Each structure stands twice: as structure tokens, then as C-alpha cells.
Image (cartoon, rainbow, N blue to C red; front, side):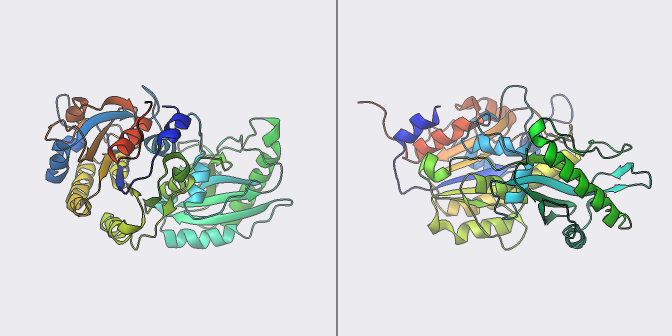
Length: 401
């Protein structure tokens, strides 16, 4: 749907919408004819909600396209991901509450392990504790390169946010992570002449970083990826007339929410229960809430089928807390699929349910891939979910006489 057309029809209403994103929700069975992680889970509350909802499957980007979490989120948020290509670095930096300026170039950084010959042994440095990473970040902050200002912020475990500030920095740079061990990290290469200055400065920084970290096993080197500048994205208030809040504990997801103009709420803790505490505390202050749950994706990427099942069951246990708030519209879905049998993101459509008192429910008493394939929402682009939610919330006016 044309966003300009939809914007003309948006009207105010005293209704509340909750979107729960179970990261990497979609899955696959372990054997032919078996059940997916979502279908295996004991989830009486999600099944009960499904029986009162419209069900379907979403395609985050396009048929057969495997997506990252950034574009996957933008799509389920209602944006056309082809119009707003956002680098992972921007999302990582926004996730640590850093204010990006027009001359800033952002990247996602992580500590890694190399041997004496510079050969990559561990791409994540053993997922070193965040406390150790914070100390190493302090060391990186001492690096100086003429003509450039650097900002380094810890994120979680081995990850950090990297910002380079100077005029004339192009963003078309290659990444240094070769995505496998047994080879050295790659140099940054400019993809066009406008990015040559940036490539030179980044490579100088990496050279200095290796000198500083050489005795800091296992985190004795760094890698950078997702170079990008801050794009201009219309906010949820501009697009949908919503006063929106985000509840997420992982940096990148806080970043993508901030990019959409949502207020990123403080969560006092790291658990799903802590996120629901935040939802309850702030219920009266917003009319749209996005709540992110990472564990489903983490288990999927690790190949932990049973862990993903248990994560879904953890979410199921919190659904009564959500429904006790009496939301007008509930969306439960995912940004992409992460089948444990593949140990990665995948192109498979993602289950989604949409609940409201005005929804034409499908009367299907299960939330799962096969059940959702029979639902009335059908197989739809993920960005179409928000207009349907807005209609169910009484926030879209009639078109024409």
C-alpha cells in the first residue's frame, strides 16, 4: 500500500496496539512429517488467543529471500524495506543511545581471536563477558588517527558499536569479517572513490587496535561490518499517528525501534518477565507497544531445537499478563524464520496472528506454521500487517463517499 495514501486515512482513536516480535519465530520440523518448534511447544495461551484471531504467514522481504533482522523488523513495522536500506552498524549504534550526526559513519564491531600469524581462530573471542569487553573498549578509545574522531561503545559480550566522525566519509565499504575461521580478517576496501578516505582511516584504526590488543588473549583483534550512515526514516507518529514505545533489551532492536521514532523504554533487567513488567508500568502512556523477544532466534541459530521450544513456552506463560491489560489489538509474529535444523535465518514465511474484538476470527485453535497457512490473512507481505492492525484499532477512515 502506498504510504502517502494510507497517511491520508489515518485518524486518532483511544485504542492500544501491542506487537510482540518473537525473533526468528518460524521453524522447520526435524524430520519429514514432524512438527516445527512452534508446533512442538506446549502453548495453551497462544493457542487460545489464536482461536480468537485471524492467522496467516508473512513474507518479510520477498519470496525466497532470506533477511536480516533489520529489514525484517522494518517490514513488520510497516515500512517498505526496499525504500529504507539500513546498515547493521547504524542499528547497533542507535541501540546504545548514541546520537548519530550527518558526518558519522557507523559500524558493528566485535572482538575476535587470531594466532601469531594473524589467522582467525574464533570470530567472537569466546563470547567474552561484557565486563571484559568494557575494559577493552576503553583501550580502543585511546587510538588516534589524524583527521578523524572515533567513538567506541560496548554493546554486549564480544560486540561493540563503532563510529567514525569526519567530513567526506563514504559508506560503501567492504566488511572485515570473512565469516569463517582459518583465514585472516579482511582489510576494508572502498567500493567507490567517495569511500576511499573512509577505508584508509578505518584500516589505520584496525592496525592500531591489533597493536594494543596483541597480548589480550582471547580478544586480541577486532572485526567491523555493516558500515552505514544514518538514513531518514519517517516516524510512527508521522506514518501512523501513533505514540509508540519499544521494549527490548538487545541493542540492535532498540536501534531499529529508535529509527522508527519509538520511545525506547528502560527495562530493569534482561528477562522476558522484566520486559512485561515494563509494559505494565508504561501501559497508560502510549498507544502502541513493540516488545521484542530474542531467545527464539538465538536458539534457532545455535541449532537448539528444544531450547527454541522452551523459549516459545516462556512467551506463552506471559500471554495472560498481556491480555489482562485489555489491549485493543494484538499482533504476534516474527521478523524472519530461524529454523534450528538450519542453524541460520531462512526465507520461510513467518507465522502471525492478529487479535481484536473486531477481527473475523478463523476459529483455528492452534498457533503454528501449518495452522497459520490455513488462516484468512493468507500469505502476505509483512508490511501489510500494520494497516490491518490500524483498521482493527479504529484508526483508518473510510475511503471515498
